Picture 1 (cartoon, one colour):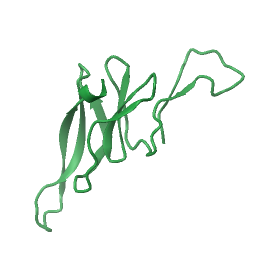
Picture 2: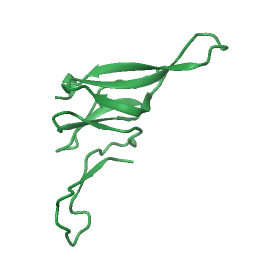
Picture 3: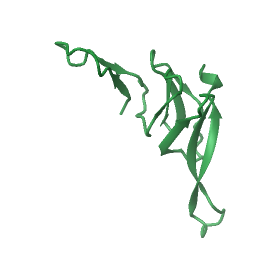
Length: 118
């Protein structure tokens, strides 16, 4: 699954896809909801076990978090820009304890800087 935009005010064209613009073009599917940056230039989302930020105009995507096998993937419910657009908040479900009996997981919120994507 990838993310597209469509212009709501465009006149119908003979080609129905003329107003579609594909934003994400990754090898992995988008695995979360997404959020627009406050300036409207970027979207943040989860794919391939990482948080990404893609530039809407070009589709250029930047991986904001590293994918590590021992680290739980970001959860799909939310990937949210801060009001100033400098950070993206996301959740991971981490183990509550270390023993086998303590397999319960709790959601923890993380933030990552977007400076690498600018």
